Image 1 (tube, one colour):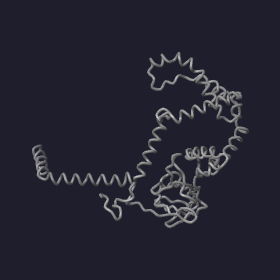
Image 2 (cartoon, rainbow, N blue to C red; image 1 turned 60 degrees about the horizontal axis):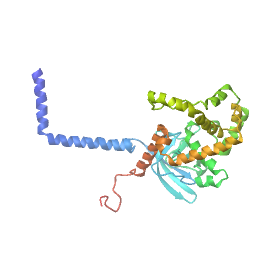
Image 3 (tube, rainbow, N blue to C red; image 1 turned 135 degrees about the vertical axis):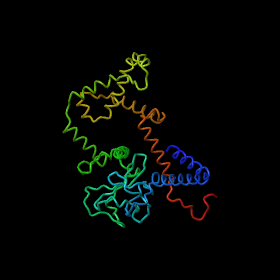
Image 4 (tube, rainbow, N blue to C red; image 1 turned 90 degrees about the vertical axis):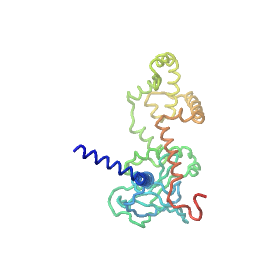
Length: 333
């Protein structure tokens, strides 16, 4: 029994040795097939078995949208942008969407960005899952689409700088919005100010927690991240001397950006000297932000996100739409 099994293995090895050229060629072919499949399915996200349909989205402008960028339904990817066509009234984005995901005709469409750095995409916002649904050749009119306000338009307003900052913040927190219209974040800076004023005036009240947090701002603990215990003990006496000054800076910067009504709830009295201190610390922080490297300014999570966005833009900039050579010339020369 054992001899028969051993003879079978030896015969198989000898047969493979005699045909090693063919086996090597077969292995290379299999490697090429697996690698090509991975590139098509994993990297280029090509699904030969998926059915799709095309929809035209009419926009007032491109708003930074580019071909091959994502199309989502409530933030979940369902397709991609094929091309952008210029029209007399704006831009038409021709998108391809997955047939397996029904998109209600009543859906609103918005061009959004993954971050303040850009990476725009088209997002369908449906209030419900009820039909009728979009089909091949459907056209979404411009009055049902919205694009981010351009930087030039924002800066033309009196409060343009504040509106720019608010719009960037709004895009960062879009994922926190709930589908209901009543749960939407304020659309503009002025609306957010009115909402904040009403909340402070009618909803908030003083409590011991706010006063305790105010006191603790001047009693900051020693930053111990990556500090070995011996060095921590060595730095503690000097930190106790510096802590009141550091706490003062944190206190003034924290309360300088607070609503006046919230300041009153904490029991902190804001004086004219605090305005001068806040202006000085703001200038110093702005100078540090412009001059210090990212590894000093950003926490690891934010720095990794920034590097990720740089890689995404790099790979998208060289993304292939086809393996065919350019028309009219040889790719090698």
